[in-house]
Amino acid sequence: MGIKAGALRASLDELARREPLFAAALADAGYPEPRTSAPGYITLLRTIVGQQVSIKAAASMWAKLQSLVGETPDPASILAASDETLRAAGLSRQKASYARSLAEEVVSGRLDLHNLAESDEAAIAELVRVKGIGRWSAEVYLLFAEGREDVWPAGDLVVQIQVGRLLNLPEKPGERRVRELAEAWRPHRGALAIFTWHHYKTSVI
Image (tube, rainbow, N blue to C red; front, side, top):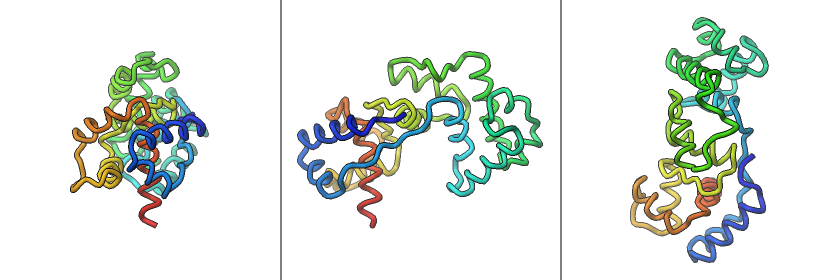
């Protein structure tokens, strides 16, 4: 789902109006493409599978998992799979426990991914109850899968680096400082997060 292209551009235009340094960066790098993921269980399971491995390795593990438990691994198939099956797919013991935790939360009804709390903070609290889903993963899920426009993943290293660069700060701000600075950018912080990733790629080329 993600933030739609029109809303993304409108938010960045408003941020550029508020902050000339953002306006200059936007003129230089251009508008980013929307970043989207499908809302629901599969996206969160893929997040767990892909943690701390390369994109190529994550894709290989996901393909193995599909071949072993089904093309669309659902919570029931993960809970029914043996430890040996999950290991054969490349999941470590820890990742297998995370995958089972997610499946259990969904099957029990404790986590309804299609009816998360309207408050971003409350929705984050619901998601981080799952083992292996930290605040960053929860924030990125809400931003990319639900298109929540003011979610701000301040713990992301690229977001911190780029906020420092965009504002010409003498050193990279930490998570706490990035959260403080971003209060002035509500309710458009999600668009700015997407722009920081886009600008990081652009500025490296």
